[in-house]
Image (tube, rainbow, N blue to C red; front, top):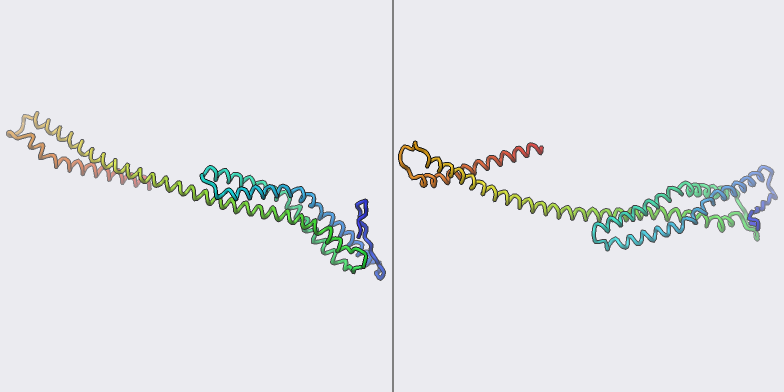
Length: 266
């Protein structure tokens, strides 16, 4: 096989001991071989045009991965995650646009290999064989297409791993913030409970004070007492009883409210 200046190739087929049908089969294999070779090489310009893109995305991903350990706050984590999402979208778009073309290249490359085996070539000194021509000119082009496709697939997996790593870091940061928030809420709840108990004690004292004041006024203004009594002494004796009564009343009211609240939550 020899490629001339006009870009066309010419193949020499020697049919010294071959019959007519065998020559036809060989010619058909040679023509199919050249057709499948040209179809397989359709992806080569696409692969070459995508090399700068995959290199650029690889460099950007490497820079993002290097910056992940130095991230200090949630805002930087979100910005990094957005950059990873952008790279992932570009990579997936490129893979989607080239998957069918590269898959066809692999299929045609396999068909070329089968046609080479069907030829059963015998080397001739001084003449380039079809297999040698394919190894020198065809296989490097196929390897280039496979390399670009594999680099995009590997880049996609790397982006996924980096995204999972960063999301894990973000989740941990959010959990730490949630724990701090829960701790703050727990402290506020304890403070509210302490204030509530303090107010509860003050309310018992205030209610008892008003009750005793009403009783004192009632005793002093009443004209139906059977005999003269020391009203101040009576009020002093009623202080413990009033305090206990009010305290038990407030406690029972609180328990009833808590019971109703539990029923509403269920």
